[in-house]
Length: 163
Ligand SMILES: [Zn+2]
Image 1 (cartoon, rainbow, N blue to C red):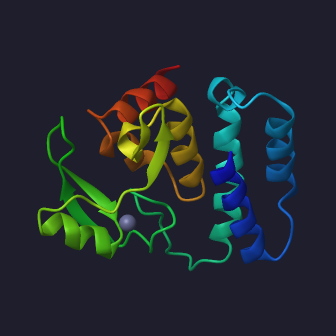
Image 2 (image 1 turned 45 degrees about the horizontal axis):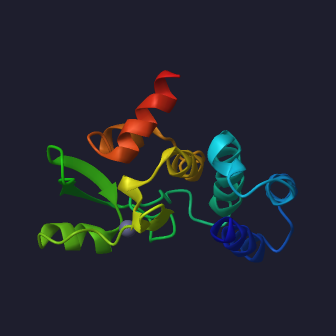
């Protein structure tokens, strides 16, 4: 919730106006129980989609969110990424992550809260799958499904796609 609050502030700072639809969702979550977000996580996708649309207006038309963190530079590079349990696959990511992957290092992935503490996005739960889909809403989610297959996040993405 704190993280989502911060994202909303950043987006509003960028556009210089309140994002009313996203605020309404945020206010609804605040009024409920902290665990509600995990049950009703489709609203998280709508929330980050609102943010992604607002941010998109302020980026160049060619901006694409980095697979590993939508707040990185534009995903103008391609690289091979191999998750812990999965085959290598080409991914679209920012130049910095592509350089890390080429050097055999892990990408600078966004960390998300989990029962175990902070974990890489690809180990996230269904709420993080929703979060990610919303962030790619403005530019297309097609590549997101394939990129995370074989990871815990990919499992949740798949469940959402086939629901
Ligand atoms: Zn990146």
